[in-house]
Length: 261
Image (cartoon, rainbow, N blue to C red; front, side):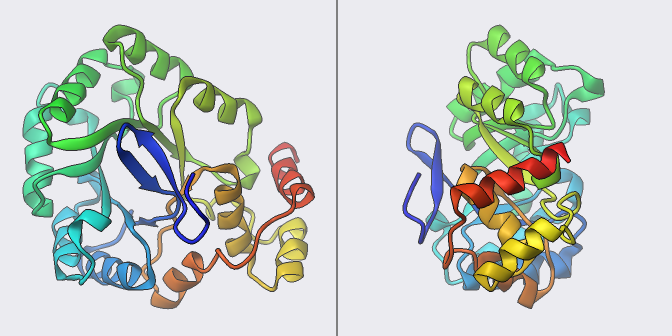
């Protein structure tokens, strides 16, 4: 993991992913464009989208409109399972929409009909080997599904993106990913995060920050990628303002315990 002024994690050989990024689920074109521009100005370097979100073109335009060099922006997108069997066409469509020559991380958005589909994973590996994406991974997969595609294709996903928040904390899930060498990335940190928790309020008050900032800092302390979504400029800035404080071991343990409450 890198220093706390620019926290990141290595997810594959030579591929480093920021630990804090911007989610863009449910953001329309205007919202997505403006949010990405704001986020890049604030200091974010990870932008997360998906074919299913319908905003890849707006996000690509925002990256190009920004003064931040392309090589400093980590762009993630995801393939809908309905495109299984047409993976090359799917990534070509995402690249075209984004206006990029290469994606930084390409994910299978969720298992097709609950199945692991190792043949899709094999085609993801081929797309990576052909240079269309720097790294590949999955989203909403269970450890058993990760094992199935790994055993079938001989390569573990770099990332698994799942819903994650203090109330969902499970040390077994964390260990299942780490023992396999899979980076855990959490989405919707506030939806299930119980931002009104007295524990979070007390810890936030001690540090002079908000409960949302404590939740994001908690992700970073665990080395788990967080991608809070917002289209509000002030909220985008506040979500990134989590590097001026650190949680103690006791505070982390108390937040972890919210997953067993």
